[in-house]
Each structure stands twice: as structure tokens, then as C-alpha cells.
Image (cartoon, rainbow, N blue to C red):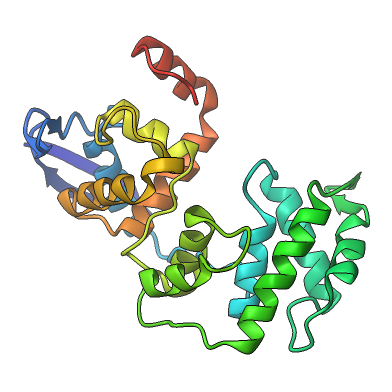
Length: 256
């Protein structure tokens, strides 16, 4: 067994984890809890975070329309700060209210320079995202979104032009706290490649659902909610690019 320890406000918490050599999935060992980014490391990190008082809040918006808008405006080469600034800008202009702005209006709003940390920044893909946003807001205004499960919401969102599995899963996780979907991006793929819980050669473009199934299997194996594990892996992998690239190079794996 491995013993994990965390100290918070002078209070010591301990928990036992399986031995590093034990398999959490067929062919995938737990690994040491101190070895970033082994399955045991993620299990320990998730448990340590649970001892904190503040729960994780995934939501970016206060309505489903806002949540869809925020997720559509982020990702895919858009820095998080720029995506959030664009979302706040459009929200303040009423883009996510009952009266759906036309595509031309959305394009004009998105073409206005944004203030990001005191710098004037132009939003990339304004034309494309205006088209996607108009289609999304129109569907949300004219149809009732299914909210009984993350997958039901995701499948419904996939009907919107420009919304793929990652964006739709992001909305479902954020809005419902869904554990039956996963937000698979480059950071999650790299973690899976390094820890060995993703089958080599699979890509999100062609094998999203298969990779998602493997990710959820890992989360169940280490007893961590998929929604929490997804967020935890993303923030740590994204925050340590030099370490991640070094590990990928050492393991003979591609960075992308």
C-alpha cells in the first residue's frame, strides 16, 4: 500500500492507496502517488483537493444559453482569457437573452477589439463564431434542451453547426456536472499517453467516444468522478508545459 498525506490548517489527513505495481486497468498500473502523471498521482490529487472547503464550480454562465456561448467562444486556439473576455463582452450586449441577435450583429460585436488585461486584442474567427453562435442561440430559443443526462444534452448540442464532441461535452459537464461525458483535449490526451490509459494511435477526431470510454473507465478505477478528474488533469497538465514536454520526449511520445 501507499500512504497519502495532506496537511490543511494544521489538520493531518491520511489515506491508503493501492501498491504502485497493482493494475488499475488491464495493463495499466497504479504507479507511485508522487509520480506525475500516474493514475495514483491523480487519485491522490483528487483526494487531497476534496479536503479543501471550496467545491469546484464549473459553470461559466448563469443560464444554459450563456454556458453554450462561453464554451463556443473558447477553445480551438482561443486563449482562455480572450474567450472569457469575448463572452463577457457579448453577454453585456445581450447576446444570450431571449431576442436572438442576427449573425451580422454578432459578427460586428465580435469584431470589436477586446480589453484583455489592459491590452487591446482582436477575437479570432469572428465570422465563423458569429455563425455558430447564431445557430446555437436560435436552437436554444426554439427547442427545449434535454437535461436528464450529460449525454442527452451533448447529443442535442451536436446538432448545432460548429459544435463538436469536445465543446458539447464541455457544456454538459459545466452545466450539469455530468459524469457520463469527458472533455478530451490535447492535455487529457497527453496525460493518457504518459500514464498508458489511452490506446496508442487513437485521436479525438476519429475515436472520441472510444477515448471517452477509456477515460471514464480510469476514473471509475481510481474512484474519482470523471468531471473532477477531467478538470484536475487539465489544469495541472496545462500549468506545467515544460515538465510535460520533457516527459513526452523521454518516453518517445509526440507532443501533439
